[in-house]
Length: 318
Image (tube, rainbow, N blue to C red):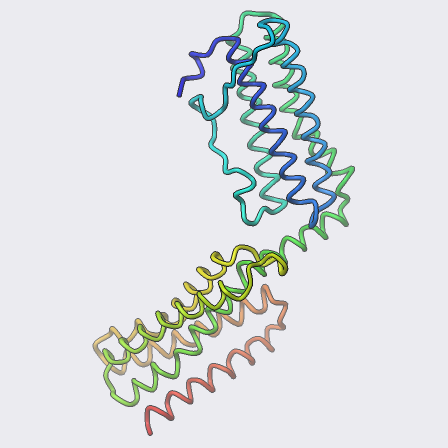
């Protein structure tokens, strides 16, 4: 890998050509990835890809005029100072806002590159073209805004934002909520049955940890194997499985940790308080993301938790 200052004018132009080609393909990838769910925004990136193609042709014409037909392959990853980007095809859940932010980063980086390259060159024609392209990249932000206004009216943008929100709920909130509910509620019975049967905090802690970890592993595999996300749009199964498994374990561990307190009564009261906090968090998530009325969410979660809690007490005192 070489420093940017070590590149010749010929290599700088070759780097600019490969960079414009890469950016154009990235914008085209954005357009293709977003086309199904966000067709209006996809048109924006298609037009931006076409502009990058025009820049590339101008650079090639100048290179051929100055240095001949052979263009060496000089890439960003061969030069120090460029930002490393994750390829679009490796992104499991590319959203509109993510694509727009990435485009802004690309434009800023490319504009800075052209400015520095123009300052280093002594050839008037090369200096002029690089300066023009730097201004063009700066203007890309305004171009993107214009293209969004033309292709993505407010009503369409609202629809795209709502679609992105639904996918976020499907891919992250829903498996996390399912895990948190299962971990918080299902482990109440074994933990509190042990508490009232033995009167020993340590025994309750061991049972709670075993139930939480076991439920986390079970729920994680169940979520990951439920579907591969290709038809439902729920995203990568292993991501959903990890989220669901971790939240299940967290939900059970929350009211298990208080039983590390030596005083039995203090541990019991603290665990009960934690249970109420967990149920409150679950109710809030259901209201915030699942469009459940707050009172209905609280009653549903509270009723289910109370049943399981009562079951644990009955079994523990039997």
